[in-house]
Amino acid sequence: MRPLMMIWIVMAVGAGGAEAQSSDGPDIGDRFGEVAAIDRLTPADTLYREARRALTRREYERAITLFTELRQSEPESIHLADALYYEALARVQAVSETFSSSDVDRDALLAEVMEASDRLEEARSLLAGRETREPVEETARLRLRVESVLAELAVHRRMLERGDTVSLPLRIEAERREVPFTVGTVSRTGAVTDASVLRGATSTESRLAYVPFSVARVTREDGSPSELPADCDPARLRERVTVFYTLFDRDPAILDDVLEELESAGEADACAMPLRSTVLGHALATGALDRDRVVQAVRNEPDPFTRRAALHAIREWGDPEDRDLLFEIARTDDDQTVRLLAAHTLLELPDGAGRDRALSLVEEGELEPRGVALIISDILKDASADEAARIRTLFETADDDHLRTTILAQLSTSPREADRAWVRERVGDRTLPAQMRAAALNQASWRGADMDFLLSVYRDTDETLLRRQILWALAGSPSQEATDALIRAYRESDSDELRSATVNALTQRDDERAHAALRAILRGEDP
Image (cartoon, rainbow, N blue to C red; front, side, top):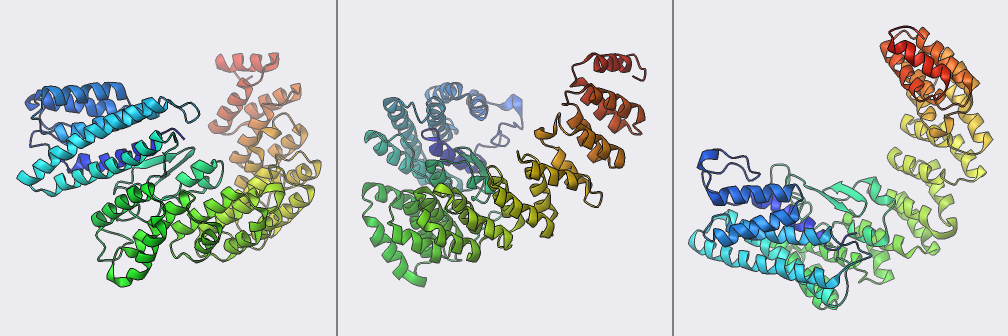
């Protein structure tokens, strides 16, 4: 996780809204630089457009230079507030991409954060004056974004001053256009629902991957509020969220009082429920809750996003004693992503403490097919003979073709002869769908192995998809006979698609027979 990357996310997402909302005057087209009348551009217009293009291309130093030139040479430009905002964005991202989390120049980071804050302070002052003279909604929205990012930068400045170079999990506003964001190795759009978050993230990335109820789900496609109580104003909610982050960083002890106030507010505060969810999510992500309260959250919180955050905390503990709790959540939660996360957390418990229960969830049909396939893939990476046998049985009883295809493909990579023999039988079974059989052949372990078997299946099927996979597998065989088989397949091919696949397979061979065949094809002759 690069330092300050989350600030970049906040600002980039905010930028998406600002560029559509700030006023540019009648001579400028949209904010991405599509100009309505090129010959009427002012020098400030040209500078601003070039700077924005540099920022879009991630040429941060050039963007900083151009934005700086704009504010110094055109202090009265209508672009000035936007230029200050985007210059701050470019400064933060330039530093984020310069240092890795394992080799951070804290002083350089701090200097850039403070420089970015200075630009944002200038933008805030400028916008405040603009609002006084011309109180338009677009100006107010940009000012709100500037103030929000200023508050987040203040948090990071204090962290850096304390020597902490890992960004706090900042909350982001998912714009109506759903700007993609990245956390460590996990990429998603909008709220965290992609199953890739369940695998491969470090503990820090797991915490940062969580996006709470707050402002991440407050707009529909048409821009109207969604998933918020009717009387809860999204702009006001964002302000309260920003204030909480700032106050919490100063004094984490306020957490209990804030939660108590929100719980007692009831219907009198329309934003109490989503704000409480955000507060809990932040507390979970920063490790501010004790074990009992985390367990209570994962069992009882109505918001699935909060329950997912609680599961990330449990996952980080890695305590085998949590297997009963995780098994319960994986079976009973009403949110499939929560259930899937609980099942994967079972798999990750030390010493295989949760593997048997995770496999039981699969066998009992407690998870949707997507989740089952992921769990099976993970188990089969190092499955015991007993686990492999249970999964083979599941193939015979399952009625979901995606799940059965996953099982067949994964077992084809097994080092055990019993598993490979079982897979060979299914690949040769003409009653199974061709796509399922081909998936088992789309594995590197088949290349150069079982040539007689592959040839027999090739001759026995008329499915093009399956034949193409067999040709690919034959291409890696060390046997001269494989080259002869490919040449024969080329001569007998009854479609251009198969002939092309055969040529591709021959190009992977490195023997004289294959070279001679390719030279014949080059001359327009049959090999």
